[in-house]
Length: 335
Ligand code: 6CS
Image (tube, rainbow, N blue to C red):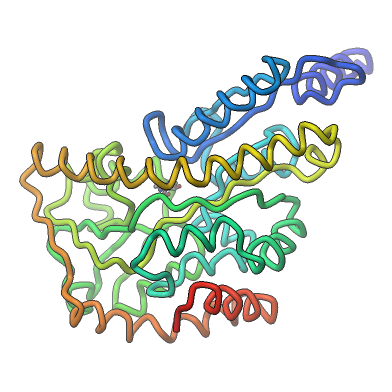
């Protein structure tokens, strides 16, 4: 028995690239999205760059959504060290790291995606105070990636809070997201990503919210009547790793990860814009879904309703959360 356990442990250490004197390393990168997604494009480029620059000494295996479990399960695998890298959307991770819900605050981020990108790449607040909150939960915060504006899909256009009245809108599981949609009068219903299509099809939910590329690749548009663009929130996912794994790496590999992350920031920013634009075209061509963009006056009504939710964020995330919100607000030049 002890022998078998020893064999398993040795195999796992070698797989993670921690074996004494082992030349070959195997890193696992788990996604919350399927093949063809923004996260998949990011991980594929990460794999290419890492394998190329280590002359193949490090091999990266990519695990798309569904192969290792839900977002919550993937996060646990990073915490335990079974997986070395993963995407962790604050919409899910906020249930574990309340401070991460700053990424779920509506109308905080400017409409200029490039301005947000600059802050996400090098924010002292995010890589200082927020990273400390991640660390306390056994996660290393490596990066934050924009994946496009969140778009509401429903059985009707959602132009006013009255349109949200009692609407069963599926959200990710972070408590602040529920607060955000309750503020509009909706009846938010959290559920895992993989259950959204059938939830809509079986009328267990009436609506959902996601960036365009996801609405297309997950076929949500097939079972919805309207898409409403309010530009209320960009979808931002964080890239996480295991602190002990990172701490145990030789300096050259640790440096390589930072270098690759910096290069990927620019790469994925352009690519997500392309993905979202192309797939909106595909949705237009394939379906008869109504596409609505809110006017500034219509947005202002939602912005007003959303304001009080910032206080809820501070209640949920505490004094550090307040500092993160204030720091990020200043860095974004937001009000
Ligand atoms: O809605 C969700 O749960 C998911 N949406 C996207 C676009 N990425 C990951 C996340 O889990």
